[in-house]
Length: 328
Image (cartoon, rainbow, N blue to C red; front, side, top):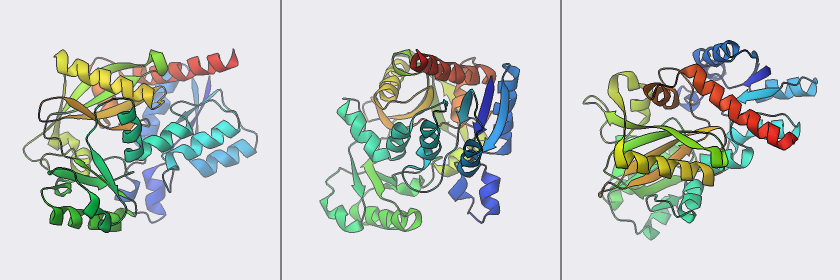
């Protein structure tokens, strides 16, 4: 099967003058090579396309593929992850992972939490701050945690985001608003254990492949799975598979969020426990990183005995099942 690969490479944007943190979500050449190699071993014919400009040029030139393996993060605004899928939809081109609606919804963490809350799933109480003057209307109990409303890879998540009083909250919000140019999500800080869950499949076929606890080591930034800790996870974080009733509760919550938000093929769901040990939905990533040995989804799959090729095969199989349903 001929499979086009759409992606955004960090090095391309660094060459254009972007700051390293601004392109932290973009992929490395090693990730693209790993996906390409896995697809080849699975008997497919992968073809590199690139990002949105290269994709549009190829489509307008009449190029088509049996399937597009899309991991492009896009650039600019809340709909950036939806840009490539929207173009692919316009051209009737099948692709892996979620559609534009879900990718826009889930990138905006507060909008996703509103849907999750409406589904009856647990998520911390929160507020969205566009201007520090709005903080006067926030009645959430401290401690609180503040982070940008629409960033990935832990950008803007740091230990200083945990605050215990109004003055500290105002200072953090002021800094985040200025640095990231988007609203700030302020939510009740959960002090319990942190988990991430890998979900494979679509709709009723969606299932949790594994539940992984994120354990911060002594040298890590304390209390939060921050951008710094994620980027240096090899020396700062230990990952362990979880089991038992708490893991089952995490898996059920993650699958319910994946289905309720309309995620397709695969996602990674981040959860954290409250003071009583009850897991809460924090955020979901329907374009989870796929860097072998570094990204959470392949790490947790590996701990559960699912190899990288098997993960890629499951993603492709889920997308093909959807295409077959549409064709019928």
